[in-house]
Length: 251
Ligand code: PGA
Image (cartoon, rainbow, N blue to C red; front, side, top):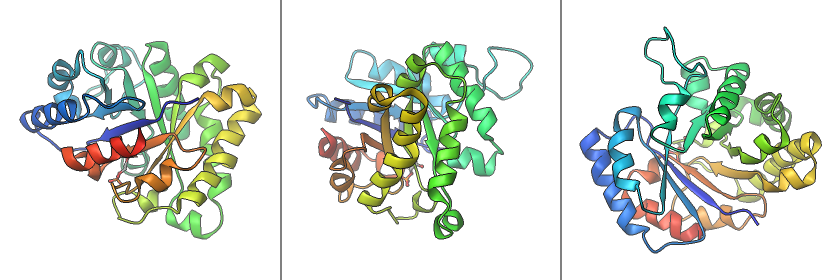
């Protein structure tokens, strides 16, 4: 049985003061919720402050990106060792990183390996754009991203990774994928590919989230799908009320 996981991707929102407020609000709101893992992913600048708030609560902490080297002359980058001091999760290969900052499948794979080597749980994002979707290329494209992401990972490592299926055309647009369709993509192009690589028992352990305009009024439809184990949430994670509704809708 896979425990659902709801992760709030705050993206480039919230000053440290605002992040502290939101984290306090979320922690007290979800205090009595069980049966779902809740993770907050603030910007790097707010990680340390939010760490102090989530410590000792049922809320986990993640970063939004990471470089794969341990240390060195890489101005502006953050290493797995640095993150391991602060948090347990790291979002890797988000489509905004791939789209605006030139991240490649190969780089994402290196980041996943580096994260695992430092006991960080990667939340690895995959998903097609509108053109690929309309051309009927979704399954091939997403399957390729999954194979590249998991390249060289042992079965134990693979089982730790969380995958987020986020169709790019659904992110921040208010358009969501049809839950049954998203489940179908996850089943064939994510869990199916992973079963081919590692066998059914490993593939059944890997948690796969849906992401892309998940809101309180549509979360239930996604959570009802057998292969969807939670959500990676942008916009609706920026307010306590809407985030709480998602968490409660997933428990
Ligand atoms: P959204 O973002 O919920 O605002 O669509 C999801 C994401 O990018 O992780």
